[in-house]
Length: 307
Image 1: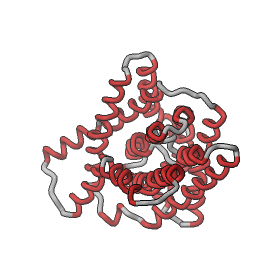
Image 2: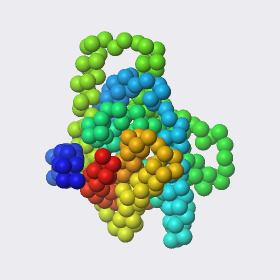
Image 3: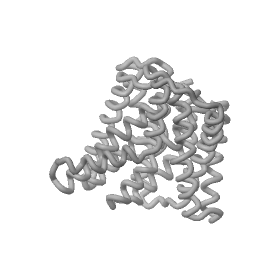
Image 4: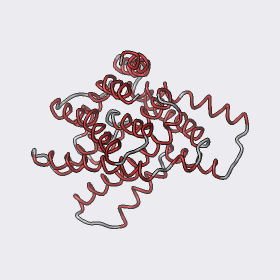
């Protein structure tokens, strides 16, 4: 446990440096936004393309793996909506509570963290989870919110969903890498070096951006933030672990990656969705702040437990 904590400590120290940089105005919002965009559109995309272009197709998609993760996440999703609704929250708030409790910071934190600590072979599994989060639960929340407001289904729901998919550079770069490998294209040596150098900026850049963005968040409702953080950091990986090891019998390494990924703190894009739909963004901001802080300990514990 101590050795694992020492291994993960540099990652969370970079998050801490980012936090202090934002807290003490070393960087303003515009500077943080610029770093975030660089990481999101360039550095992470380069890392993902480089990894995925080295993967065999049969190593990338595993229906049993995706089914296990999706089912475990959906069960918790439904339970949280039910409990949150019983506590007196509006349906829209309950849906966002479910999103907070199940969708982690897989892109910015999960990919660089697991690729470094667990091995580059984990990236394919992490990307399956990222794609599941985006394609299934990213679509689900849009449908639930729009249906609850408009009370109708229709093809109009497809436009924002398709736009989101095709505007996500992480999804695009990963699948472009898969296509590159499938077509058996050879990557020139200068391009390999370019992708390597640019991709190496993803880990420190993403961690710094996470910390800096946290400096602008507040804890307005600590009770809800604590219980939602508890569900995300401990409840979600526990349920995923039970399903993976004892019901679906996922291969041990893949199951371990799934559990660690499930233990990641709340995703930042949940806050952006809440702002877009004007549904209690402060509530989500508090959960992101608390879950990221406590994840330094819970993610470390989960990695030590799995490996």
